[in-house]
Length: 65
Length: 148
Image 1: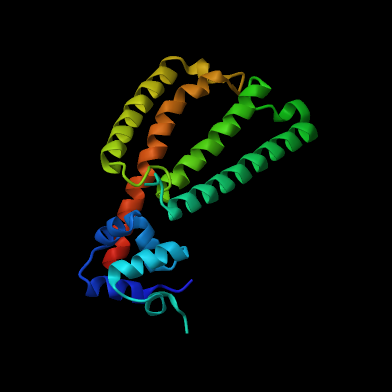
Image 2: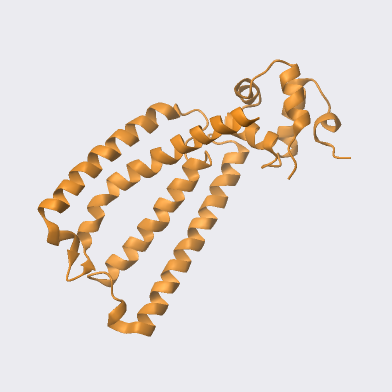
């Protein structure tokens, strides 16, 4: 699976650490790390939570062209 | 609030599946060699010891990969404190157990076969298998972050 660079970019643009984003969406830091590394495909519920916290759409973060 | 997040639950199932496969494989190999080689393949003083040692190996394997993949503790646990506790207690336990085996050299192996005394190692192995993978993972993550 490819790395999710867009998630990392959106997170750093919001000036959030992995730990802070993880706390905001109620998961562990390792889960965010696994999503960014492309090791884990999150469920749609988690994707929505992440998008809400980062203020972006699902397409912006998870849609692959 | 759930105790584990979705990735932890996914990893728990994955680790349990790998451990179950290992357990089944080891039991099958042991049974196959036992049938094929007969008494030449007996490595435990009793059949029960052999089965329990295989169970111990599979459960330790499950512990190690679960801790490594962050599927052992709940998401709110203060992991670092627990890990140091398990590491120190594991080392102390291991020291005492090795000391015991040195002073009683015939207790571990009886006529070249493993006896029940092997399970004295269990608390030490459990403590170490919970803590060491965590520290290895932490070190590995720091290394990966530096590379990025």
